[in-house]
Length: 297
Image 1 (tube, rainbow, N blue to C red):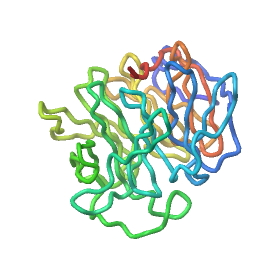
Image 2 (image 1 turned 90 degrees about the vertical axis):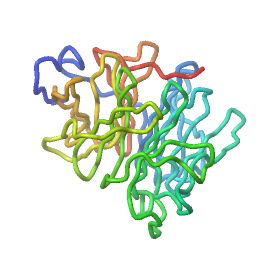
Image 3 (image 1 turned 30 degrees about the horizontal axis):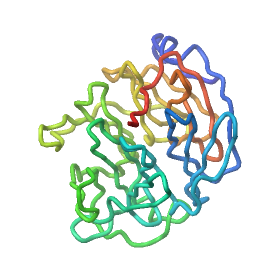
Image 4 (image 1 turned 120 degrees about the vertical axis):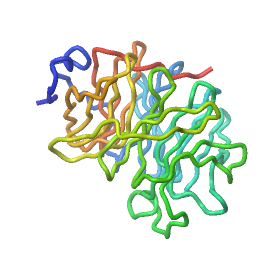
């Protein structure tokens, strides 16, 4: 079956079933899908392949950046620069239209970041990222000792060597996304198999967090990439594929993806196409409810 329905509302959000269209394959491990709203193309990382790929309906797959320093999560800032979490360098970078790459987060209190993993940009331009140690192991990164004693969540600051630490009590912080009203931040923890939610304070810091939902079920997978749709449903990787939660944390069901799933992003003109990075391949499905448009000035 292509879906596991746990609540009848699933059919009006995703559908009674889905058709998986494999748009690209032959990679080592795909991640970080990112839709460009004006140029209508998809970027995605192949972490162990050390490359950033680009796909469009007209041109198919082409190499966007190689080497990519084993990039993982991607986002656009409000100016359209490509933000990348790089495993091999343990930094967050910004790539401008001319291809110039600038580090925007590299250290915290004199110590190198672990390996930035996933990233989001707020409407006001603030940039947030998670920093587990996955990029310090073989296959997904460059094996080396961790310098920091914790796994943090940060906001990018003015100085690349001084990002603002927001949370430091995660085991493996991974995917993150804003609530529909942009007043809360969802962050998941891969090792603990749950999603937490945090209220924003006026100064940009985060209030006390709480466990919002858990990803439970059969099959390979854990909390990883996470996105929100246009009515506030949260899509999060988990056992068996992609788990779909209502705004009040009820799990409606699971999109059972054919391969181990790491991330997803909505795209196409109506934002009803969900692009899924799943191990060696990238898939596209159609959902009933569209995702949120990507904000690029």
